[in-house]
Amino acid sequence: MARRARSQRQGPRGGLIGRLFRWALIAILVFGFAGPVLVVAIYRFVPPPMTWLMVERMFEGHGFDRRWVPLRRISPQLVRSVIGAEDSRFCEHHGFDWNAIQKAMQHNEEGKKLRGGSTISQQTAKNIFLWPGRDYVRKGLEAWFTVLIEGIWGKPRIMEVYLNSIEWGAGVYGAEAAAQANFHISAAQLNPAQAARLAAIIPKPLAWKAAKPGPYIQKRQGHITAAAGTIRRDGLADCVLK
Image (cartoon, rainbow, N blue to C red):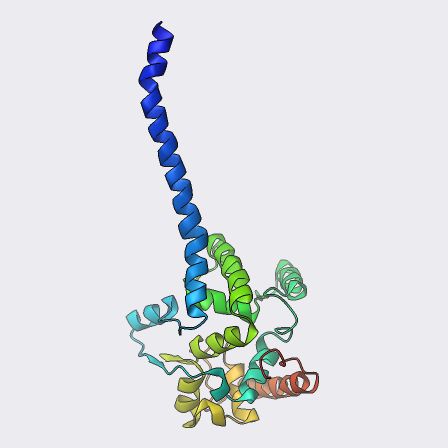
């Protein structure tokens, strides 16, 4: 009798805990799955707003210059240069370049200077949806958003968002603002040399200058110009430049 009484008293409480658990699970599914899918779907058509990095830079005292332009108004030279510099297999992979990741891991295990293996798709996912950093939670979310943008956006939209959002100097974001700030022309007017310079400074946009490149950037420019030529010759940007 005493055991049955205890069971009856615990019944409503156990039911409440069960309901709370189910609601928590539903909330996780909605916000963890449906939420990101919805946001990515919206950004397929709407320019993404300010990113975490842009807000952080503003708090650091930098300005804000971003001028969104469609991909058709960005020089093909810049598209090829960026692919040649950052992700030569952009049109061939589905978000992750496993060969590059393996090489980067081997390079880092040898104790050399850290080198990343992120594709343009991964960089775009990180820049648009996540905060700066290298923790495992962020890397996991980066992988999830990479899968989403590859499936929902496609390559041309990924490139368009990437070129309109990455940092290209103190308070300078996107190809149009970068072209105006460095060369006083539009992104559509960039020639091969100018495009290669902009691609060369992507890894360190606050330290390196495209307008007045030093010897190291000039050397990188030469390598990127050659890589862009290969990209054009072999059609490695055809998924973007149709």
